[in-house]
Image (cartoon, rainbow, N blue to C red; front, side):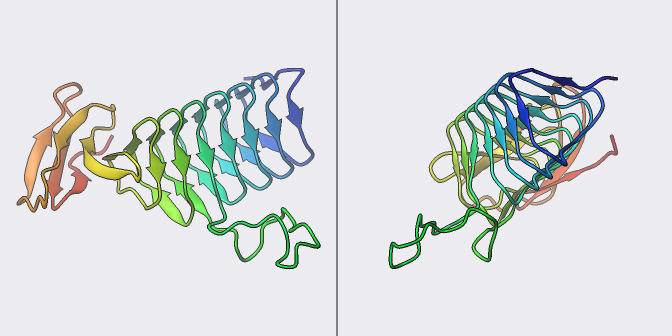
Length: 207
């Protein structure tokens, strides 16, 4: 499989791009970033230096991925999503006489997006957090805390309102102060089975 890079894209030195990946127009990929196999990076997206992206990841248009972000296999990042890595950013030193450098430092905090997760269009993702395996973040959400595996999180700030299957279909909606005993749920769409207790979702079969 070949790598396709649009002639208007900027790919800096020491960037790794896996076989079968497509980089669309006006994308900017900074030095030392790694992008896996069979990915799509949509138009006018930005990927910072040192970012690690797994295989078969879909990044839609106008996505901003800053330094210290790691994205595992099979993730979808929808259009207009912005990642951040500094909780208390300043443009300058306290005396306003020098610009602060852009390179990662002690204020740069990591973000991990685990395999199979989906981040909806127009989301803003904070830092020092993890978005769990096959979690789903609703469009326009502000993610300020970690999201557990298979959870559906929406809102400002994003909160878990239910859980979803690997296939993306809703499994159940959470109730307020839900403390259910372990219960088994089968996805009505694909038939995969899960055990859910106290909002912790566990797969009952290996895919």
